[in-house]
Image 1 (cartoon, one colour):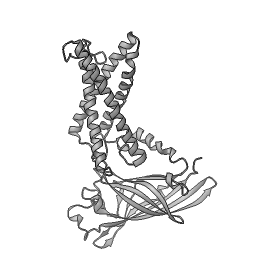
Image 2 (cartoon, one colour; image 1 turned 60 degrees about the vertical axis):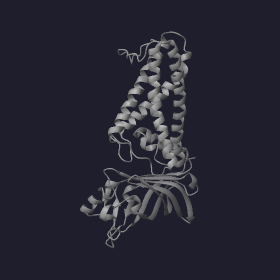
Image 3 (cartoon, one colour; image 1 turned 45 degrees about the vertical axis):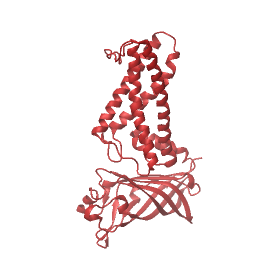
Image 4 (cartoon, helix red, strand yellow; image 1 turned 60 degrees about the horizontal axis):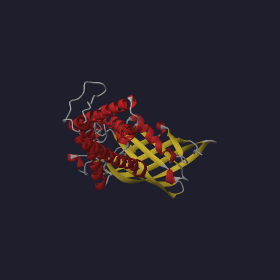
Length: 370
């Protein structure tokens, strides 16, 4: 996973800032609600000192994260978001930044006013920010508590929004911030949704994703050699079926080296900046005997476009508890919607605007879970 952000994904450094800060803040909020009730003694003193230490750590992390974003631009918002969602997300993020900087500062000011040194994990004490004053202590104590309440509210909205995007909207808002391990875990979270559908294990050597552009009126064929399907499908349970296919753009192959190099370059897919395309279903419906349609979102170059994919599915028994599933689907994509082909290459008299795409998948369909 790259250290820096790309135009569509957060890098390792940003994810580390996010998740370390989140873990500390949640613990601080929980401890802050309980520590006043601890009996006077060494334990309470140690808890207060750790609370201060981790509070200053959050302040340092927030400053570091802001500096990192100045030199490493964040990915843009997901294209499928509505304007109000983008504005609300920005308001929540900026509010969290302000609150998480203000909270440790308020605690530091409160300790200074009380004449209690702030030592971070036993290091030499930090300088007092203000003179000792008991009246001021009460002001900053109330402020510290009020900010804590606001953080819990805004953080709750932030978490609720992330879960909405993952479980209801089924977009990539949450997934693109997750570390690899957490991403795998979250991909399994909807497994209860898949409880009554078949899991398909694709035979890559028998499967293909092909595209058939026309250049100066002559069709040529290309394929993507690397793609990762994650499919759960049951004809009798379409409501709970789901499919995601991630396609590695750099694996595009047309049989002509110069054309392959141009295809993954900046004028076309720009694989260096947008390494993957993503197909994710939203719903399925049956259209006939063995035929279906999938309403889905296709993301290329960080541009997401809704599409409808018609396909045919046949299932043959291999053993009493195993079946082979074969799926064939075709769709015609409008390359201009994904900004594929810039400058002179945008001229549809050279490369046709409509590009047929054919998907052929052969998979071992395990029995539906009981």
